Length: 326
Image: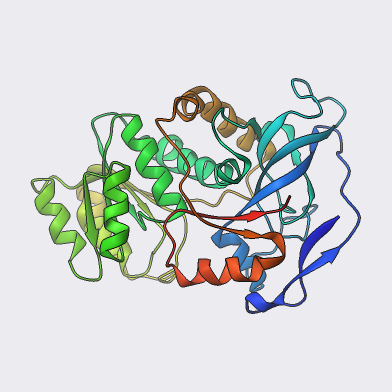
């Protein structure tokens, strides 16, 4: 099969098309003919040498795919060869074939092509587990998403809005803010031109934000704490602005805040299967109806994976970046 290999840790140019033997579906797995694969920030970190795959996982990049079932491993029920599937993989998505645990596989919603479906698993699993399972966002509450125009952000806006929350976002340009508003955000703050903390404190009548989803870290840590509402929950899923911050914990105590952080890839098969089951029950009907849809910023053929990574690192995109494999 064709695949993309990392020749050595480094810039996007280290991504090269290669050939290697196709994987085999082990017990509990599906083998998938990959039609499209999503590009994500963790792929960039792995390419740079900072995010090694967990033991037993493929060394190839690619944490989400969409395609057709090519083979069904022992002990797997409910799937047949030829079924349209999208999957959260443990690695190996940048290839013509990939394997995924059956518990991390979901049917491609009606109306979505493979390119759109490939942009679903990583972001939808991440948003669901952090915003809804960990932070417990409820109807009528407020959510702030930093990086609202990213794949995670465009997903979080739609999911939270569909489930009855009011969504605020930060983004880095007028175009990105406009896109977030079109997806259902109540207010979008251009952080390059405005102080999001002051703007959103005024927008909420000084009540603050119930749940904050942050990918920045660094100096945002204290700003999030100050902006959080009483009993607020702050969840970090990345630290693009730095892993260290000097924190004043007095407001954490006084407002009874919950601070947490998580990453998806190292979680157990059982945990990911539970996320998938909840998504299938709660979110998949809304995908089927078109109430929620993945936002695809750009597509690239597999052999242009380096160009896809360049776009990812430029942060000029709105939504997901997808590799077209077939």
